[in-house]
Structures are given as structure tokens and as C-alpha cells.
Image (tube, rainbow, N blue to C red; front, side):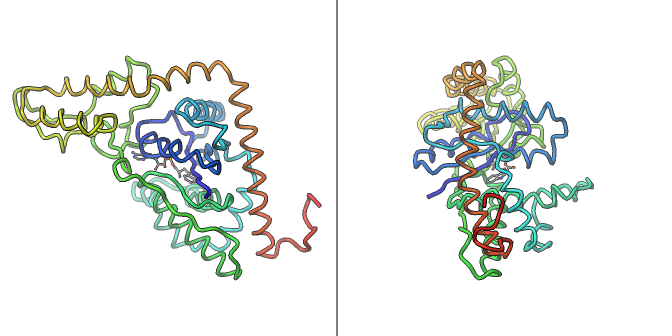
Length: 330
Ligand code: TYM
């Protein structure tokens, strides 16, 4: 069973990325068929500074390794290191109906906000479908916001199979964890860079404290009873706490006599403890860029081998391959 997922290097990873996706990557990596990649081609639709993009890709690789992605078990690579994905994107593009893309949320949201979308953003879901299909992926661990894209992937895979009367593509399923499908940000909305409400995993302690202190709360006084269910501080605490710890804090909320400052301190302590070991690993990896480059190089080789195989099948099915021995490899 192939597990595959991608993450965009558009800045530093935040708690939404970790609890919605990265945590699952690590939990699912030990079947030796896991492929995880840094989606730099997708990031090009928003990052237009080459040095920044390089920095984000490097940071993304280090972050993933520090958080527990193990290259001895899973394959980690950079999307653009496997150029086969762009060829498959074109094959899929030729069978993609416009209306399918018109309803996709990234494009729709931009359009609704009056921002001109380019063809890259509009066709973003087709590249994502190619990412998944290129490696015969069965299971795609993601947060809620990506489910629509996995559905598009299934649609396109199915349509290609149907049009060419083959079973050439595997149809994937999304893998979403109920509790963390949509991690809230500091304002209670979905945590997202575009909402400016993120808490980055590896912020220095002082900045982390500042971010956590900025989590929105109501103006109830310390002595007032409070509702844990509607409080973003509590929602974030839940990410780190055991059910017993959650129950205990919920009890203190309801009883009154506890200020939000105290709850925020609990979130800070829990986050520092939870990500402490990863922070230490990150510092070591930061100093070993040869190792990180090596992991990405080997990852690209492994991914490319598989990608080539699936692309060859697609070329054959669609009539691009003229004879079995055709192609640049002879
Ligand atoms: P991206 O880079 O926006 O996010 C990476 C992963 O983090 C999850 N996520 C969240 N989960 C829960 N709560 C949140 N607040 C939250 N914020 C982010 C996302 O659901 C995602 O799983 N299009 C993809 C990248 C991609 C991809 C792929 C994914 C490209 N090709 C192929 C899977 C398979 C994206 O923009 O994710």
C-alpha cells in the first residue's frame, strides 16, 4: 500500500500542518512504501522570490526530518526533482473538464476576493492529481482542506482509465484524522498562512510565547466561569493534552477562578515539551546540510524510478509511445 503526501514550502510549518498532516506522515511511514514530498512546483504559484523558495525548501526538509520523518523508512523528495510529474500533469490536463476546476476552493476563494488568478492556480489541482497518480498512491494523509483535491484526483484518474479503456491508474483515498482535520488558529478560524493566525512549530521561545499570548479570548473576568468548548486556547491545548488533562482544564474553565493567561501558559509549556526533542534534532540537522541534501537526492532517485514506470504506462495507454522500444531511454 502506497502512502503519499505533499506539503508546500511557502513558509515555516505551523501547528495545523503538524497535527493535520505531518503527524500522520510519521505514523504511516513504517510500511516502507511511504512517499512524502516538498511541493515546490505548487509553491511557485505564490512564492516569487527564488532565494526565499530555496530557503523554504531547505527548511521544509529539515523540519520534516526533525519532526520524525525517517529516511530509512520513508522516501522524502522535492517535487520538481521528478520532472515526470509535469508530463503527467499535461496528460491529465487534456482530459480535465473546466467546470471541475472552476469549483475548486483555492481558485474560487481568490476569485471571490477579486484577485486575478493565473493558470497555475487554476490548474493547481491537476498537478496535485499527477503528484498522487504518478506513484500509484493508495492513501493520502491530509487535513480537511485537501479532501476536495483528492476527489478531483479520483475523478481524473477514473476518467483517464475510462477514456483509454485501461486500469492504468490507481485511485487514491484521503486519510483524515477526525480530531485534527481542521486545527484552529489564534483567532479560532482554521489555522492558515492566508489568515495570519498561525503558530509556527519551531518559533524561538520568546516569539512562541508572544504568539500564544495573542490567542483571541473573550473579556470574562478571572472569577467568571468559562466555556472550554468555544475557547481557541482550550482547542489548542487539546492538541497536546491527554484526555485526563483536557478534562481537568475543562473543569477549571467551568468552575471559574482561572484567567486565560494561566491557560495560555499551559499551552506554552505543553508545546515546548512536546516539540522539545524535535527542536534539538533540528539544531543538529541545521548543521549537517550534506546529510539533508543526500536524503533528498536519494529520495528523488527512488521516487523517479517509480514515477517513470507509471508515466510509461500512461504514455503507452494514450498513444504517445509509438513502439514498445520507443523513447529516449531506448
Ligand atoms: P499545504 O501545504 O497547504 O498543507 C500541508 C498539509 O497540512 C494540512 N493543514 C491542516 N490540517 C489541519 N488543520 C489546519 N489548519 C491545516 N493547515 C494545513 C493540509 O491539509 C495538508 O495536508 N495542495 C497541498 C499540497 C500538495 C499535496 C499534493 C498534498 C501538493 N500535492 C499531493 C497531498 C498530495 C497543500 O497546499 O497543502
